[in-house]
Structure formats: structure tokens, C-alpha cells
Image (cartoon, rainbow, N blue to C red):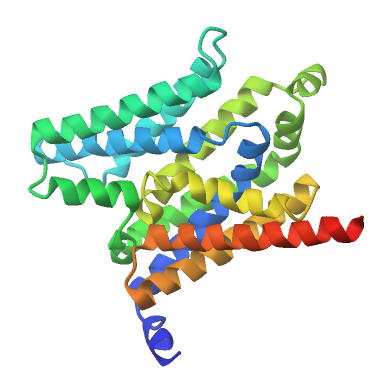
Length: 286
């Protein structure tokens, strides 16, 4: 406890916890919608796209083609553009949603790794790739402006979800009925895709590109084991996501384990506990 109190007095730990908690909160809000729409792997697909975008940013920076203050200048627009493309492609009758995700995500992942190898953008290629895919301690080296950027983007995501909650609810459960009532379903699906893209970029430093989908899916699935209504599941998912992210980061700092893997391990443990609670609850109802 003394070591923990000592760590919590350091500004870089506080900054990391703020970013981690906000990222987890944003991820959980849209996670319920993605799970119910059976579009869970959009997070995984966009995370691979973000990896390819980071490779492009690294090449531009190393080749002095573009003076980047931060890779997000390139990564965020490319990821949002890919989210829009993914949504449009998934609506194609010849290319279904799951096939579109697989096509874009695998292509972006391969292109990013190939580009990094060809350009020799870094002297520690394997280390950079491992860090990008699985996360690292970069979350503990955030600058103040990066923290503020994360706070602003997180507040925008939360505000969008609250303002358009009813429309997102309608589009999630029955697109045909929502369309019949005059709701612009395509516009709100596009909004969801763009928000998810922003969340993916925010979560890159926290858990790495390969583990982002776990941050989106696990809290939602855990909440669904206990509750049945959309509102209750969303609130529970947000609480579980924040608790898991905070606990995982504390454990990672105290034990020296990878941040992303530790957070996901806590998410898995909480999912097992919620599944047990759900089983007991269903048994009690009978």
C-alpha cells in the first residue's frame, strides 16, 4: 500500500490513469451497440488499419517528408476514412460485413508491416511492432498536451453518445423500424463508425492494436451476463470497463507486467465472475 501511495503521487502515473479510464469508458459505451449489431470485430479491423496508418506516419517522419508533432495527425484521419469505407463496403450485397472487415484489416496489417520493413524507419523494428500490437509503457510517458487531447476527444465521444442515445438505441435493435419512423439509419451507422475509429486511436497506446477489440467487447459481454435492458447493460459495462482498466493499470505498474495484457487479463477474470453470477441468478429465477 505504501508503494501504491508513492506511485499515485507521481504525475505520469496520474496522467496514465486519466487516459486509461477515459479510453475504457468510451470503449464500453459503443461496445454494447457493436455486440448487439453483431459487428464486434469492427474494432479489431480498425485497429489493424490504425497499425498501417502508424507505419505510414513513421515512414513520413523518418524520411523528413512531413514534420509530425504526433502520429495521431496521420493515424486519426486515415482510421476514420477506413471506418467510412468499411461501413460502405459492408453494405455491398456482394461483400458482406464480416468479409469487408477481414479484407480491410488483414490488408492494412500486412501493408503496414511491409512498409516498415522496406523503409527501415526504425532501428528497432521488432520492438516497435511488438509495442504497437500489444501495447507498452508508452502510456506512462504521456505529455500533458496528449492527456488534454485524450480528455477532449473522450468528452466529445461521451457527448455524442448521450445526445444521440435514443437514435443509437433504435438503430441498434431494429434498423428497419428506425428507418420507417424517419430516422436516417445510414447517417447514424456512419456516426457510430466514426466514433469507434476515434476510440480505436485513443486505445492504441493503452492496450495495443491486437487487444483493442477486447477492451470494446469484454465489458459489454460481462454486463450482458447479469442484466437484460440496454440501459442497464450500458451503465454496467461502463462501470466494469473503468474498474478493469484502473485495476489493470495499477497491477501493471506494481508488478511490471505489460499494461495492455494486464488490463485484458482483468477483463477476462471479470467476465468469468459475471458469467458465474449470471448462472446463479438464472438458476435462482427458476
